[in-house]
Amino acid sequence: MPGRAPLLRAGDLFAVRAVINGAYELNMLVDTGSAFTLIAEDWAEEFRFKLEPPLRSIGLVTVERLAGPLMLGRLGSLQLGGALLRGIEAGLTRLPDVLRVDGILGLSFLRNFRVTFEFDSASLVLREPPPARRASR
Amino acid sequence: MAVVKKQEKLFTEAEITARYPNEWVTVEVVTTDGKGYWKRGRVIAHGPTREDSLRRLRYWRAKHPDAGVAHVFTGPLMEKEVAIIVDLWTFPLEDRPVEEGESD
Image 1 (cartoon, chains in turn green, orange):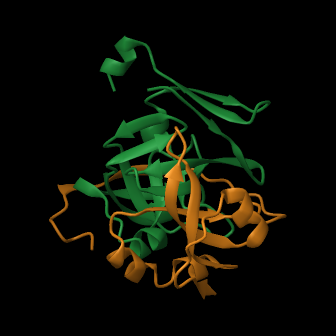
Image 2 (cartoon, each protein chain N blue to C red):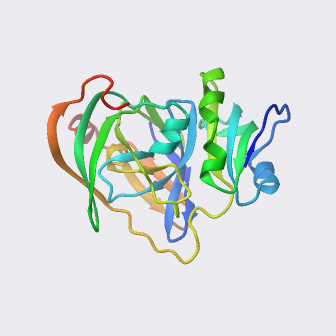
């Protein structure tokens, strides 16, 4: 399902508004350098939000350091500007306080689309990939 | 920090931004648009820090398990004079499934 979401300025970066599991709306930094979609763990704790199985543990590395293990699981759904995906893999982690967002939208979501950053119209455009690529996801 | 006890008035995001500038706000979503984004809602909690808007929400959530909620900051999404590089790579740490309850 294609979608178009407003790009929100976050300093020199960009964020989008996303809806998780049809019930949780939050701002997420768009990060094509992040392998996974991440949710702020303090937000998840207060809202009693849990990842869905299957769960697995991997190592997390940032530019400057090894940040430790990251627990991954599945989101029931993630909706963005009309585009909706079910069961994408995501992790819970602590985010820097200077970022006033509750998540990072990474490649585990973005790679399912043909993504266009329209900076002039401040939009993130998500198009369906060709059928052959969709089949190999 | 303010946890709003009971609020009947519904607000749009523009109204909440004007009412609580540069604050974290948690909203119970009442109506949404065609893309699933909230249009009008009740303010549950707000404050200048992230903790203000999240504190005690687990108790609210326990009473409203099916309600839609939005969590937003009404000012700039990044502090001024900060440059940040967010690149997160991952590598296999333990190729094993996680037992039920281990992530709690």
